[in-house]
Image (cartoon, rainbow, N blue to C red; front, side, top):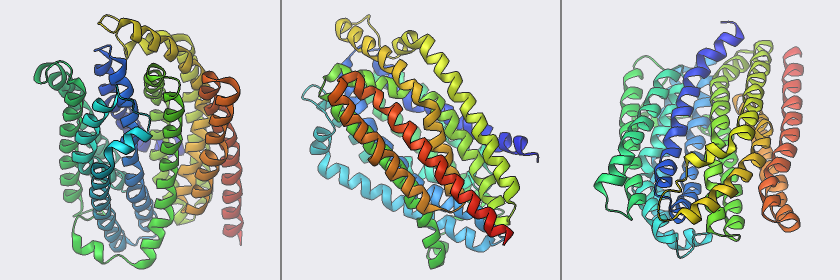
Length: 453
């Protein structure tokens, strides 16, 4: 296909999946906001950073394995691609069980460390116990299975599996929160609805993966996992670990943000939690573009068609920047109604809710300016992963979060207070984007030189 058409074919289903998953991830925030209880909102904000750790495990084996499967398919090594698929799936299962166990043992001190106060701790414990300790397995496995399907050409089916769970969560949330649970237990109801939805999504994706394994380089057989070559394991980890670290470091940065924000108060913490959900709209679209682009870049890289590979990279970059600029205009103009969607002022907590909304409006207008820089970081990282450059991905992740963003948070928080803390994302992501573009340029230039030689 022409490059633009090929990207649309792969990216549109992924974008749709990301958008529905966005609804999936913010629906709890939306319905909890109907209570007007800012302390419940702050509790979900604290818990969400732990939930996002799931993506680290899914990226380790889903992106690491999926990228390798795409490269092996480009080299026509389908038998070993199947073994990589099986190993990725079962390793994801093992990591999910281990993470659940660690959370169960150390739950209270972890939540205290993340900024939970006496007012928010009971709600946070309810949410984490159900969504992560109990529901971690289906969440990580479904995300991993979707990555594997997407990288073998089944982007539409992966999107259906994840999106179906999101739609089900939207339906179940109000039922569990406001009809099955008594007042005061809305957080528990939201957690139960999320876990049920994740489980249904997991069952669908595993069943479909098993079905298409008859014709695609995929496998669910445990025997195949043990047959994976050591060289393929190294290749999987070479991309998977940096990709996982990229997400993990991003989560650590959000943890630092929550801890520093909790120092200003529970209402400010609730406000930044709402903003972080709202700003995921452009991020979801842009990640969908990058995920749809990844297997095309990986396939053309492995087959030696570097001119087409670079054309895919350029086209994807333009698309994401357009999305980012449009999102800035929308957030600047409509910050107030967007924040008010997530927090009701018509309940008994109206004073606290109004304060939360006021902070949220300002926070959103500041943080949205970082959107183009965030996309350039995502785009460069996905390109490096597609080309198997795990080292470059890891270096970028470390520099982006540990050298730039986190130090900027501490510095600007100390110099300019709460609004300096909120503004740190612009400085951190901007510096990270410049570094990422330079890194990608160096590596693509090296690929061209190797090809010519």
